[in-house]
Length: 186
Length: 239
Image 1 (spheres, chains in turn green, purple):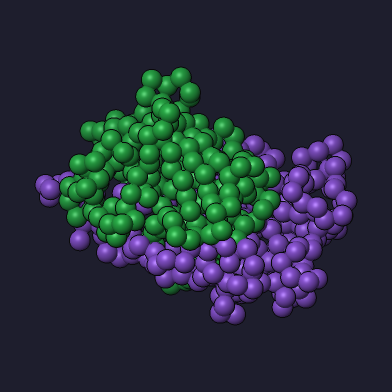
Image 2: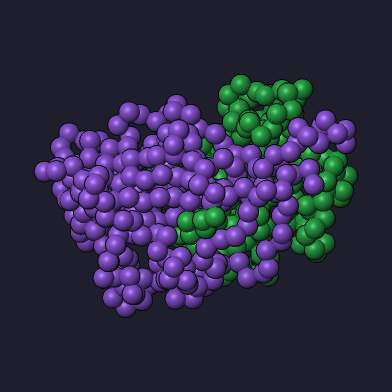
């Protein structure tokens, strides 16, 4: 068994090699179920991180992943919806995606997980990505019974639930400090 | 859950062993304010983590792997072939996965607004390429050897020459962004990003091999760089 190649930082110049290609639009703006997810990324001193790369991975609105490991054929795939998004933060540390709210997906111990989006953040000064999840504020009941969210200490859970704000969902990420976002080890 | 449903959910998990650097490596100054300090929360690999974006060949142009043919003229510098195989920790090929690379030009300058190094830009070199691995996990780029460049991490700091690589693999859990280095680089000793991987045997995994066999006589030198993604756990998900 070989060890994986070690991770290294994405550095400050990734924009030339990891083009967004409209990657912040998982669905077209006019999509009937489109939602906007936006936020800012901050460092441990509270400064916006203007050179981060953020990637999303999610199921479609029915809860199906466009991937061979998800072979639940009774749940429809949606042509054109891959479920992957990529955005670089702007000069003020902000990112923005247009997507759809994913449906619930199963948990390996049985039952369903609350709707969520998996998130990776890469940046100069991050030698490996940080991984977190975005949960939804209108899913209080599902969130309360979600096994992953419940595994986070209660005082920090709220930081994983996006906030409704002016018709969008806001999800800020704090890499470090008093308000450090819960990050996962997978 | 019905037994049949459990069986259909018996999808792979990925092993956790890793040669990754820690988040905090104070010699690399930017980690001091960006590295998370709290313990990570263990995440069981659910369907969300064992799936991931699948790329076909759509969106990858025939010449996207050749960084020397993206402009009218040819870039200056030492032409080189970068090739290798992407495999998982058990040697299985990583097929059909997108590999994206980016790098400085031969003078050590990135074609990027943030790069202030007073070295010349090369109008014939953008420094980015992409390709999709074949059925054996093989990939191949043609480029020029990147130069070393200074940065402000510490007095007289220089990055060892490197090429950035990004690949997805089969799942969210296997996502990798890394850097490939050149054998015998005299700048290794003072490069804290290279040294963030503390075990010297693990640092070797980031150094390409000069590959005489793949050189093209009278045209280009070659380096072989194999990429290893996480291997599969033998335990199926239903357990």
